[in-house]
Image (cartoon, rainbow, N blue to C red):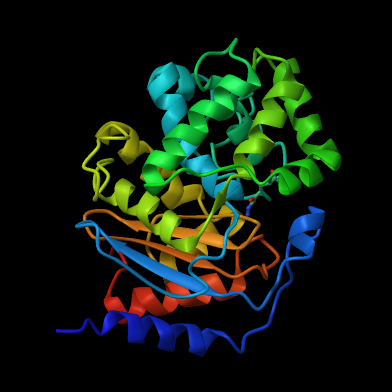
Length: 307
Ligand code: DON
């Protein structure tokens, strides 16, 4: 029997399409010029079945969605205790690009804000690793999660690097606070490179479904992320993944999630489904307007709210 899910996903896209609120990220030139008509959704079940609709093969940079996966890699490479000594787990309540260091410990509040993500990046492989070694490791894990070889969008990387004063400033503050040990420029360059990895919604849904499936890839059966790390990642996605809108997101949509400024969002409902959306226009917090609307519809229609 033909599955009704693709038709349903198409309907959901048509419902949110008229909403043209928000604007694409303007601080990275390539993203500012994004085609705002692009719209896509994908669902990946924990049995490996993927359903998608709209512009599901259009690639965009993963941006902050990478933070969730790089946090998992940092835990694997440095150990959870070492990661917790450097990065907190509390929502900052502030924008993603604020410094947000905890008073006393000087740790970035959580791994989903830039300060925490730059720190997590610096812990990948080893504190004295080169930026190349770190990005190679990240690209390898993200590719295995997606189930295909991913690559860096050099244009997005160069565009963000040209205008990276704020992240560079955060990198230097982290070094001065004793949180990162490597050259802050290298850590920030590597972080910007991880953000410039290209994906489509089907890749993201599969990456998310792997989180939902206790770190085991639903199609290849490879155990990519240990279960204890998955729990840690999904916990911080729940409390901090949507930045200063995390509380509203959890109460309305109720799924651990992470957004990126290119317009992607992932949602991960453990044991059930990984979802991904793409639409470049963002709200004031940096979350995709239509993406949030799609997730809200899916959550309410399919009863996905955790509570
Ligand atoms: O650090 C930055 O500014 C970007 N490369 C990533 C930010 C991001 O995706 C925040 N998301 N909503």
